[in-house]
Length: 214
Image (tube, helix red, strand yellow):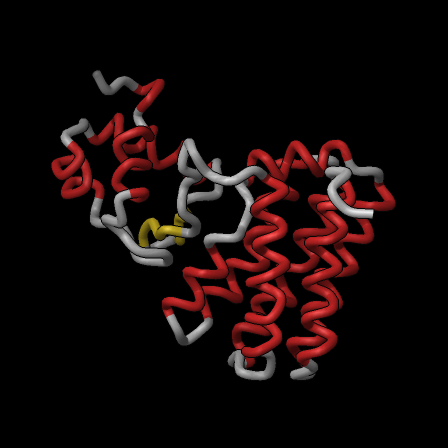
């Protein structure tokens, strides 16, 4: 039985089954509720829950979009996700550095202060969401759906990342912020080596916080 407490389950299942692809807009609420066999009130609860998890993103006057895929119950650990991120995201962003439109770079530049504010506010879930949004903005702009999906599949679960960030020292959190800023600098100047180095340093820094790297 679907209740408000588990309202997101059928929606998560549909996402895991590939009903909608990454960055695709979901159908209108009425149609989506009918498709999932739930009431619109239950659907709104589910949408709100998945937005909070960082899986969906609501854009004003545009609708709700798939921002990341939910974690399968059998999914890899956070450490495995971060290692995959290092292996896949590092060369991916290096390869496309210099190809992003100025508007994408402007969006990232405007997003970076939000990461800084979340860092200093101490809200680790919000900080985790902003970290993941940094990469999601870039992946959404890559003109190759398969590459974008490969990169997105390596992004860690927002809850797991938030818990890890909660355990990080202030100095480590500021170091992560610097790696993101350096990634932006590498992308802006089409410096593939600098971009790759910064993304790799970001993933390695998180792995070190897990005690997975020396």
